[in-house]
Length: 471
Image 1 (cartoon, rainbow, N blue to C red):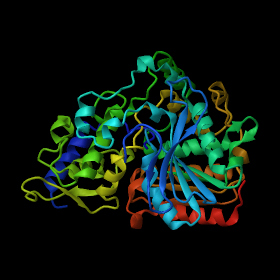
Image 2: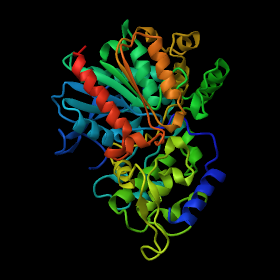
Image 3: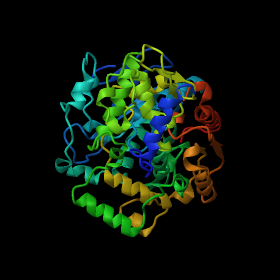
Image 4: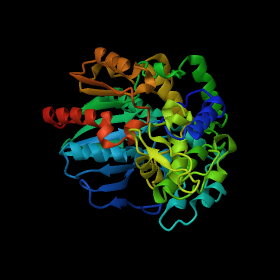
């Protein structure tokens, strides 16, 4: 989802100012838990299934990942998409539907990492009457870092070994071609997979193409204002913190919606759940929103979600979209609703965020994975990479096509970095696309007609499918 939350304050001038402007401007499933979740109809149907992975030292049931599959089972091309930091599979569902509808013979697999097994989403399941009480009153099952030392070992090696289980399943013994992609740090993960050494076999030999969405390596995040932290001194400090028990990345607690690793993610899903099920009803959550983030007048469930995700409320680029605005005062007996006048309708955000399974936001992100992904930015077999067990040995050998897309988030450095990767490898051709009218999350949820990322990625996939056999 996001690489790293922008370091500017969201509880002070940025967020408060956005709320003030928004307030005064006025005119401008099924139960969580087991088995398989299915959606009938559509373009080939949708299923959410487990994939067995290697032993990771976690609790029973955690040695697996999950995949949301969208599109025909007999597709000759499978697009495997990896979410970014704190992202989860449902963040790709709408994009997947658009791609499958646009490109014949394509199926999309969206990955949920093994960390997703640790989240308790039962409060959103079928028949749930009071999800807000279940989660905000602390009745859900939470992960205590003191009892989760195994998460401190879930770094990039573990993540890529898990991802390979998915890629190999998608390849079906070489009968299908696989295009591997990702969003934000998911793009970094996809590129790392391609350069990784799997017992002497380069990862790119499993693939027919790469798709980088608003992330990557070789300085992709330089333009965001939060470049990677990969000096030896920074890495030593971060590893020491992990060894001392800080096994979870706490970045999202900076939003101000709670101080637990999962607090912000729960709030976002709650907001999406109510906005999806009763968009025009008075907000169920508003009175419980922390005062610093609360809209100072009654709003609907849809408008409350809008205040959490829209860029007009002062949220950083990496966690926001261009959706719309609050309805003028006086509508709906004093309860203000939401007006869609952006590229990403709030109903699409709500549909994705509501879940329940899979979700959009991963609850528990391993701090070690953050370290490893930062170090992977060099995209080379450096001394530091070898010390961390990162087998990035084959970047120069990449011989598959690459697609790169950037929004306003990176101020141009995503495409610049992709060009470096191409120049330093044997990539046969590349497509570079940009849309500065998008924020970091817009490509995931924007309306089909306004989604530059989906349209241009579909063009790339048609070219790959038309020129490449299964590898």
